[in-house]
Structures are given as structure tokens and as C-alpha cells.
Length: 462
Image 1 (cartoon, one colour):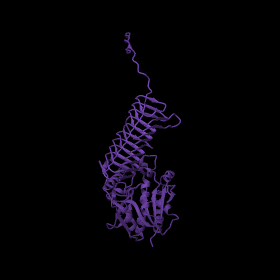
Image 2 (tube, one colour):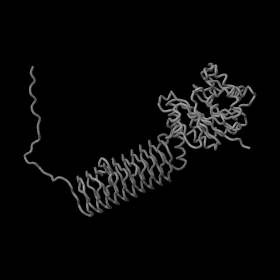
Image 3 (cartoon, one colour):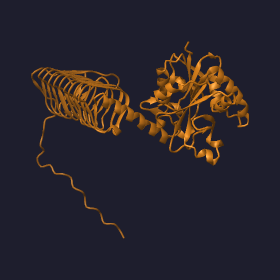
Image 4 (tube, helix red, strand yellow):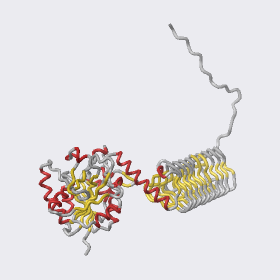
């Protein structure tokens, strides 16, 4: 009969070296807090229980990680990892297997976790061999390949510090054994000013002649803890490299995988291309043959077949139809929608607005709370004046309408199908279809007018 699996995630630390008011486990990685990545890996193992040990800013961590399948235990006194695990196991099934993970080790490979669970030993410890082991506990093997104990760096002599095999902190053991070993290790904690090491369980298990399985990580760089901004950035690059490779294997062409950031989910059709320094957030879906230019940011966006999003455009919570062209330097805000073949050019902003099939706004315009009909042309400098200081109002522009440059359409207002609005117009009433509407002051030339000149400067007294 398979024993229940209980995953314990340690997330009580403050993370002083981050120099942040935000708890360490809530630092962002790939668009999510660190703790969320750890919980994703925990859930992938189909455990019977997940316990998160919280401490510093416990309420914030609960809110970020909270879900119905998670049990929270608060470590009110920071007395070490051994104490945290002891709290997590109190009152839980003593016949379960326990896998200990860490809120600041977000990218532990599934293969490593599976190996820990499959180990045929009362205690399995995951280690890693790295070039610079500074800061990590060292694995003491006697004989080589057989773990005897773990020595924390603060307690290590120079010979021990030269060892390149380090403890990742991840381990798996039976709950009943783990509780017994932890209780024995509590006495040693009194000699260390109350610091209760989880690593003491290795020495306790060996003292009972229990075999300890030492498993070396299949990807050492992915099981290193994150303690400062430098280490956080290294893990971000590791995560983004993995995501870029996965996208490319799915058929996406990237201008440079090292300059691509996926901070959400991306689905792309065939023959899509994303240039350098593009950021994808939320849920983004691309049709076939979509091109995304350099420096763009897309968040919760749907893009149709054959569309082009040109350089340095920002799109959020909007949809772009097939064969549309957006940018460069365009901004589509929430509620913007482009139907097939529409065009939005440089320095055009849209919010809660529709651009119908074949319609275009090519330069320097703002379309807010507006509906633009098929094939309509919005001239440079056009503004829909949608806000009166208290309420929003709509502008409706009919099919085949032409809005001259530098026009202001004061909503609520309608422009009929096929209408032309002359350049420089301030439109405050509806413009009828198929006619020219103007609203501008008459031009005058003042004869004999002279441009002012500067007066001679008075001499200064000596």
C-alpha cells in the first residue's frame, strides 16, 4: 500500500540580504512570487497534503500562496529549519512520507524530486556539486558516496569548506522517523543558541545505523537557494532560458532567446516570429504568421493570423484581428479591439475602442470609448474627448468616414457614414453622413502688422 505523501514548504524567513520590505518568498520570478513556483512543483507530485511554514509577514505570504489545498503553520520564533519542520509535522499522519522543499528554491527539477521519493532508504538527501560552495552546508561522505553528516559552513573547518558537494536542503523521510530524529536534534540546538538544524537528522539517522541515500541533482544550478538580488537574477535567466527553449521547440522563432521574457503563458501558431527584448505577460495567444517587433510588451492579448506588432508597442487586455498592423510606438489599452486589416500607427493610443475592418489611425491620435467603422480614416492629431471630468461618453464614427488632422470630437457625438470632418475641427454636434463638416475660426491676415522687436538695453552706470 502506497504511503501518503506530505510536502512541507519552508517559507518563514525574512530574507535580509534582499534588502527589501517584501518577504523573500514573495520576490518575483518569471511573473510569479517564488513561493508560487515551489507550490506548482509540489502539486505536480499529487501529494495528499501540503503544509507551508510561514513566519515573517505571514499574512502576506498566506495571501500570495493561499489555496484550499494548503495548510499553513506559523513559526512565531525563528529557531531554525528543524524547528519549522517539527511544527509542520505536529498532528499529521505519522505514517506519511515527508518531502521538504524551500520557498526560496523555486526551480528544483522534477527528476530530482522524483528521485528523492523513489529512494529505497529511510532518509534521502538531495545534494549538488558546484564550483563555488560558499554559504552552503557541506556533505561529509564516509566512504565516498555514503552520506555520514552535513556540516554547516559556519561550523566548518578549512578542509571541510574545500568540499564542493553541498546540501540543497531538500530531503525525504518517513514522518515518524523524522519526528524522532528532530526531537533528538533539539538538544543540540540548545548549544547553538537555539538554532535547530534540520540537517541534524542525518547524524541522528546514521547514529541508528539507518542508511541515508545521497542523491546528486541532475541540474545543480536549479537547486540553489535565492538569498540576494544577484542570485534572484541568475534564477530568472535560468527560468527564461527554459521557457524560450520550450517555445522554440513548439515552433516559435525568437530573434534571440537570451533577450526574451515570458512572465505568463504563450500559445502561438505556426511561423510566428518574436524579435528581441519582448515581454509576454498574462495570457497571450498568437495566430499563424504573427510578427512581434523588438521592445514590445503584450499582456493578456489575442493576435490574429498575419498581424504585425511593430517595435516598442504596448498592448494590454485587447484583441488584434488578422492582418492588422500595430505600431511602432502604439499603445492599446484594455478594451481596445482591431478588426481584420485595421491599422494603428505610431503614437496612437486606444482604450475601450473598436477600429473596424480596414480602418486606420496612423499617427498621433487618441481613441477612447469610441467605435470606428470599416475603412474609416482617422487623421493625425485626432482626439476623442471622452471624459467630461465626471463621466465617460462615447464617440461613434461611421464606415468610410474621414476625420481630418488635429480634430477634437467632443463626446457624446456621432459622425455619419462617409462623412468628412475638416482638419482642425472641434466637433460638438453630430456630423451628417456623406457631407463635409467644419468647425474652425475663419482665417484672417492683418495688413500692416509688425512683429515686436526687443527694446535697446539701457547702459549700465559705472
